[in-house]
Image (cartoon, protein in one colour):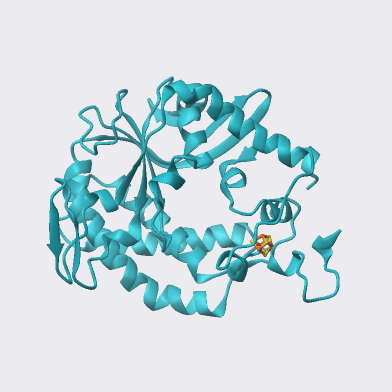
Length: 315
Ligand code: SF4
């Protein structure tokens, strides 16, 4: 695809740490392999979608919902890879049948046990909810992992409208507040809930609805659902410094990492997402190598490097 032909920009295009990768991806210069890290995230997302189809009050009653959720996630993952014409690496294929189900069973079990009673006080709107929004003539589209009503703010996202958006993340590095405060993916979710539309179900059909509300939002850091593996001293959820032992649950604030933006920043937020697209349209896609990202980059074999002859991406 040519950059000038792009009709709608995805939130991933705005948040990728390397603009060069965005360009290579949009122009089809990526390999078709799905590594373990990608598979883990997709599997978790599919399993959580399944879990949220069930009443959270029933999540803790037995392990059936968890193992069924993982099986569902694996089916969804294989379908999605097939649609995208991607193939699992040998390591990912091996992980998918051995290590990942065990890892996910632990994490999903803790998700159900710890968050289920809180979700039971909220009302679901949907998972994988499509959103779209347009600012200054630039169209954006994406999906929200989980959207729900939390009128009593039981998740303490600070929502005033009661609308809440959760994004499930499985990254090894937990996000700093300084990072989340500038995260354009969350920024666009926040703006789209106020000014764009969400495709939601109602009266047996789906319709695009303008919520006209700033949502509460959180990055749900799934790896933090694993218990501590060593003794750690940190603040608990009440703000008291406490010593946690190996095997203890981590505080909830390390799992549900709230992202708050100020309505007074709306104009600057719109300018930030629109300027990024304008930068891309103007042909500015700077490489942004990083010590870990390049090693697992799907576009790496097409991207400029300086220890070889010229590559396709060098032009
Ligand atoms: S290999 Fe590194 S610099 Fe190149 S596109 Fe990928 S992340 Fe960016």
